[in-house]
Amino acid sequence: MEAKVTRRSVPNADLLEYVRELVASGKTVEIPARGNSMLPSIRDGRDSIELVAPDHPAPGSIALCLLPSGNYVLHRIVSIDKRRVVLHGDGNLVGDELCRPSDILALAVAIVRPSGKRISCSDPSYNRKIRLWLSAPYFVRRVCLGILRRIL
Image (cartoon, rainbow, N blue to C red):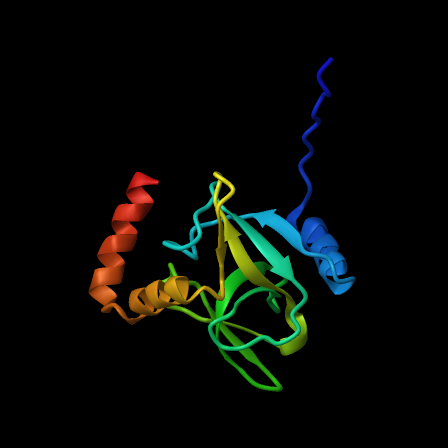
């Protein structure tokens, strides 16, 4: 006899508050990626993100944050000081988000592909690819993102 799987829809705010509680208690949590703001490294509906407590957030880290608007984002930290964090999505051509360091819920430690392959966010090869992507000229990123968004 097969076990019946019941799927329920949970509001993002409730789910992410639960994620905050779990990582604060020392657990590692894996959540599905939503949205394309972190293309090309993280894809909506395909990848999952492994999250841990935000012990040492630093520029370059991928952070799950609560914005002052009440929205949650998973973006890369551009800069951080005692009063504010500047965030930017790898797949966003313009626009940064701001929050306070206390609004960082978790840090990504890995990207998990559907095959189960785990890409560590601290892997030197992964970080070289990200630096190359982020340093590409605006026009190149714009064209690449346009193509990716059409074919995905």
